Amino acid sequence: MFDLIVKGGTLPDGRVADIGIADGKITAIDVLDDATAGAVIDASGDLVSPPFVDPHFHMDATLSYGIPRINASGTLLEGIGLWGELKQVMAQEEVVARAMTYCDWAASMGLLAIRSHVDTCDDRLLGVEALLEVRDKVKDYIDVQLVAFPQDGFYRDPTARENTLRALDLGVDVVGGIPHFERTTADGSASVKELCEIGAERGLPVDMHCDETDDPMSRHIETLAYETQRLGLQGRVVGSHLTSMHSMDNYYVSKLLPLIAESEISALPNPLINIVLQGRHDTFPKRRGLTRVKEMLALGINVGWGQDCVLDPWYSLGTADMLDVAFMGLHVAQMTSPGEMRKCFDMVTFDNAKAIGLEGYGLHVGATASLVVLDASDPIEALRMRASRLHVVAKGKVISTTPRSDATLSLDGRPNVARRRHNVESP
Ligand code: FE2
Image 1 (cartoon, rainbow, N blue to C red):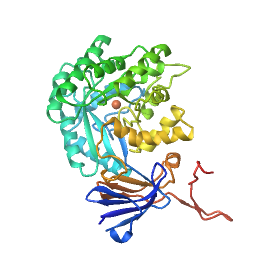
Image 2: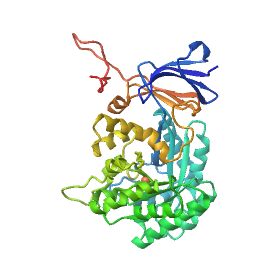
Image 3: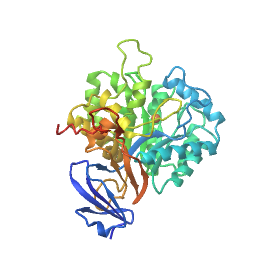
């Protein structure tokens, strides 16, 4: 009857249920008989979640930290310059090897869907070819979407426009852009318009790095929302970063946010990176560079959390752990009430999946049988502990297991095991 039953776990909505899996799909959520399964995972007392989703990443740059040097200033602009140096010396097989190692890390962390930007400002399209290969290699356990990303500017770089179109012709899934990096505001707006038109003509989603700057006058999200409505792209467009919104005039934002909501644009801040890269030109007070998350959520805008970078020219840490990402987002956005903390967990699962249009996602009958069993009793505890991924199931198959993180103590008069679990909602 079932290839696998995940027994007695607590789902993110608090239900306790057995999950029956057959032929790569969830076929039952109920009280199920172990005798009907080829294998059983005992998840009693543990959280069972759909897999983590990273809607914003750069897999062509990941794990390149220190090649050919590190980012001394820590700024976005030095990172872009350093990436330009790295592109001159990197080979396709090396990009594939780094990305495959990263995908191993992701699999172990229950991160089973990744939307990765890939730089199209390279006449050889080496990164594009490499990540198309990786997308195919990992397709049985990780869903990879690729975004054609003209890192050096769709118009600013002389061959970026042609190469971005070539990348889309090769099968890259999503149209990207970087309007705030074009030479002028007018060029930025024009790039948004043309890239959205390309998305509309080709029937593709659009996902722009948009206003990743502390400049409050960087307002390309307004054009992105307008073009989304003009071209009927509602629900298919993402504004990534949106950091300038942190510094914008409040009256302007009161007009902007309803426009974003009407356009059904998803917003994807990247808290680890935004907190590190933004505000670098400030003295004090020093801006924190995260977009207005709670204000967008209050208007019903879909907001996720992206990771953006791991060990690359822009970020010197990272472990493919979306709970780390949500943990930082929770702190910087001050989402500390129980409901807000739960929302932060939903943002790296359900809301990220919605942002990138992932099909078959979730824990319901008929969904793809991908899930993660966490060493935590609920989503808040998972965040607090960045809980171990005890079992990761991808498309019906167990692909990774990790031991619990209990410590063995040698303290007189104390129990010999320290478990850090402590459910904060029922103290
Ligand atoms: Fe990015």
